[in-house]
Length: 215
Image 1 (tube, rainbow, N blue to C red):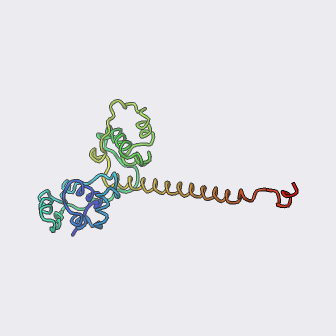
Image 2 (image 1 turned 180 degrees about the vertical axis):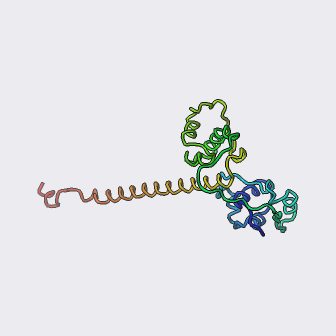
Image 3 (image 1 turned 135 degrees about the vertical axis):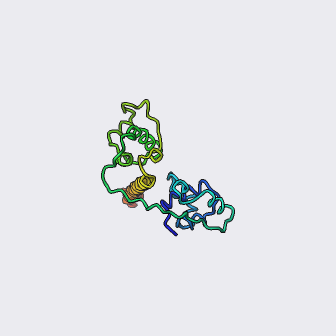
């Protein structure tokens, strides 16, 4: 069977919008059944935007209904005659003139829904600049009164895969920084306990037994 586009995002959508079993979703997307269950429990892919496989012809609604009615049935990927998309080379993202006025809306949406993203990531996703992102963040943008948060994927400013990859990268970085912070705090706590142990209150200067008797 051909490879499913964006399997994890597709699994998120199928979990949220169908009654398919974890095994059916696993077989279709190629993810492990336990990973699909973790997605359903919110332990994996939290905040990831689901990708509807019917929008690009990977699945039909009739095929989903067929599999929902028969829990032993396997989803069949719709044959595709369209070639797979070519990955975009690195570098500044070109934004059509007609869509450039939508960028502040997209930036506002990203700042609201994915605060873990850095300004540079937001700027790269929508083809803008860090200064524009900052102006939307602090509400000093010249057209702020007309800015309303809108999904950049829906606006066509970025691909869902790029958005999910950026969110995953930002969350992994935040998790590493949090782990390093906790490790440093634990180290400080151990050192403090060690310092206390070096000064035993029972060993402070006390008069000798003989001196106490003479007094």
